[in-house]
Length: 143
Image (tube, rainbow, N blue to C red; front, side):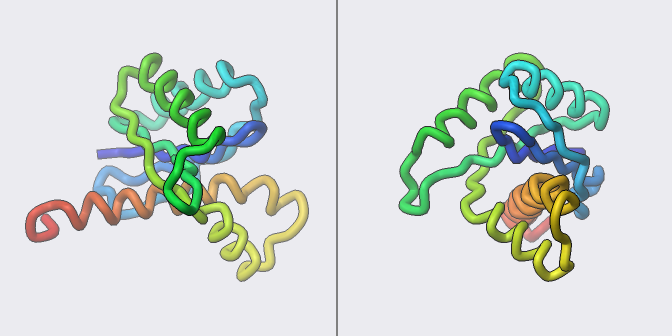
């Protein structure tokens, strides 16, 4: 099944999509949009374009597990995406994915405007890889 992950942000939203075997997560781009409703619509359009069957949205809980204003905004975003797309939407704990994305970009010496353009897509890939690992491990005998 093809799954898309979303790293929702106030100005840039990263996207990632996996192959139908759920083995490989790849960046699918960054939506540069500050308008909440327009961003929801663009995410739904990308989901249609990639023919995904499920959407995973990063859920930025606080490090102590509590829910802050950013996580609440992601809950609302997920609700709107689900209403419009009619696809199952899962909120997935994304603590530290942006930090990890920056670390990966440091290792590849990606700097400046190029870094700003891809960090959210890299974070979306990390969210999707985490979710895919969970799905793989929850299946009986890894099948």
